[in-house]
Image (cartoon, rainbow, N blue to C red; front, top):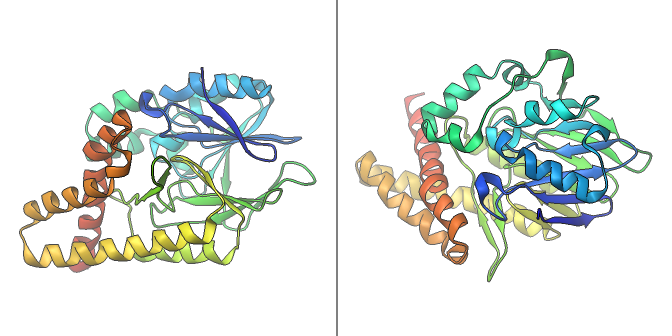
Length: 308
């Protein structure tokens, strides 16, 4: 059975069992007069998401909006599959990413180039979305779901150029996608960076976090995984980690060949994952897939900056 939890008033977190891993990916249902999903997961998560929606007592055909925080496939790849059963739903996406949901060919080829063909087995089919069902969003745009529930879109580059966060008025909450990283609880709380190639930009990531800090929100809804009211603490921790990792990468690249730098940095990333080691499927994915991607994103960023 799909796990569903009401994490704020009228906001439900659905464990989408991302890549068949428990407690790795979360999609949020806002159950207002108008109803919205925050993120879609990949198409391989569609059945879990539909089950979660129904557990809340909502029918898929009642959904008005599927709002994706950015166009990476684990957040937006399943939108086209979901809206087949959501006849009135529009897909809201950062204006820089909208064309890639209408024609996902370039998006898919980029994923294969960075992650290999096996990524598409994990993500599944990316269904193109008709242009008339795509609603591009810009910084400051507002979407009213009810008198008490207003969403405001916040431009949030850094993880990628097409990122946005969403502030919701009812609980003073922030849906942050991957802009703040990945958050897990267990024996200890863990905050991991999300710095994949080719779009990672350190300066823009830090700017985004400063913007989020200034909003003085009461709760953060992470896409990976769950919610916390330790808002300022986690935002500051993310900023500190971004800067610390930048220092580590610069020193490592000055001292070593790029190949040995990558190995050393992956080892460093895996050391940070120790608190989730008991969650074997999650640890395996994070250490074997996410850690190398994060390292590649940092190395690519600094190499590009040096070349520029």
